[in-house]
Length: 396
Image 1 (cartoon, rainbow, N blue to C red):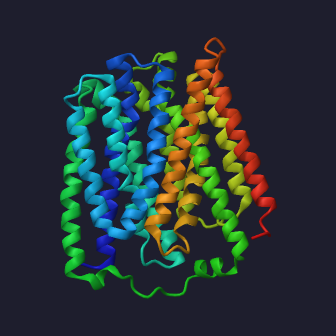
Image 2: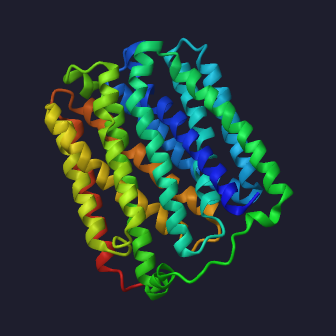
């Protein structure tokens, strides 16, 4: 099997993984609200613990994949998630569901750094641009579809689908992984990429000084967790936002997934256009859009403002995420380990935002929009960090 055909299989794994994990983790908060009466504060606590576990285990799982092999890491991850979801389908306590959700998070930690490494391995800088672009489009597209139709699936076929649909997909992923592993072992020469032809994008990296390239990597690693501070806070509070707007679970899926499609559109544009590479203005504009759109979604209780802010949010997080993964994969031989760092940064953001929101709601329960104000203030500190890193870019 050729190098490109193997990568096609990896993209299929990635798309299936994105659909399954989005359906389960994004709607888990709706499930906990309906099954156990969880409010915004309780769901924020869940989201914070989720992020903390993801941050810690992503680092370890990235190193595991690099040391013991990508296929072994994938098989471990899919198997752990299958066991967790199968057990959760029989669990009738809130504490048990929360514990099994964390087990599923650990399983997921084996998958994303590994998939990122598989699609980026043996590529030139131009090839990485191509592979990372396709990778982002695949996971963002399937995630958008899962979020968009997930509410309707659960509303029409029951909340148990949050376990059974991802479980069926994971079974297929495990089977496909075993098949791809056999093909890669039979033709090990096929795993290596063909010698890359000269490409203008390769020269782009050679023109960048080490200090500038390192600065953009650091800025992307700083901005991405802040983007996920906003995203995971929104996801945890989306049942409350939907309730304030009078939206059903299905309608929440339709209207609250707009930012996912906007992110997908941003990925397509960034894949085909290279002008954002090593451009501080674009990264700064995206971060400002992140702060503004988050505040509008959380504070302005209007459907039209929600939809407009989601479009801005999707574009902003699209550029920020793309930057983090792109600069992480460029120039790194230990791609599984760097992928783990990229995912751990996401987990850090997933922890900090919801944790701050939960604490602020606990400390000031009678202050309107206190959670949104606290997280918005935190996002502004990230803006200061970006500016400081950029001003110090000439220093190693």
